[in-house]
Length: 196
Image (cartoon, rainbow, N blue to C red; front, top):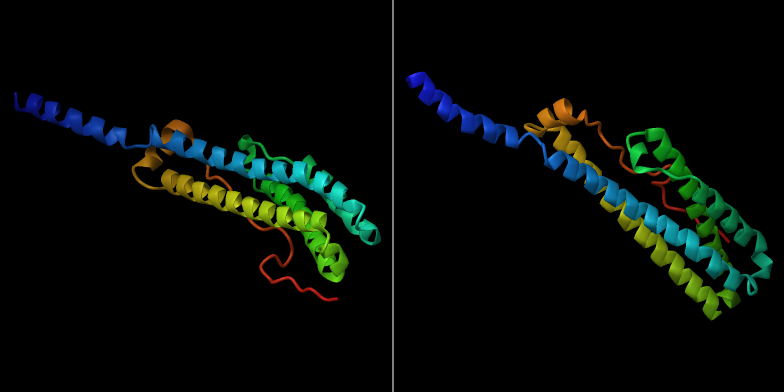
């Protein structure tokens, strides 16, 4: 009789402990990571769609720096051709390739902004000012989207490695850590030098 009472008391305790093993929280965290990655891709797509139109508008005013604009267009085409699906978020090489392509585009855009400083007459043109403003805003949006993605990856990776969610992560889902977005450009941490 005492064994039966003990089993009646242990059943709710066991059920409660299993409910905290990440059954719902692991897929929720994984979907959050995927949504944040979609936000990153959305911002890169916005840049890919917006920049060519703005560059075409400005191209007429920037004939002397035609190669810089061509470089931006080529880098944009390359960056648009490298994609990462949500299934590849655990593949460091896929994210590295994606980051490298996006980094090359960012470098081309940086050279374009240096052109603005070199030629003040271009800077005074309203179209060029609009391009400069859009470039800055676009890069800021990308930066925020990458930060949000990395926060979601950190939360997910922490969840699948800590008790009690580690039980559900390993036993039920076979969860693997997601890869955070990292800078791939050489000397990305060093401040850029601008010389005229």
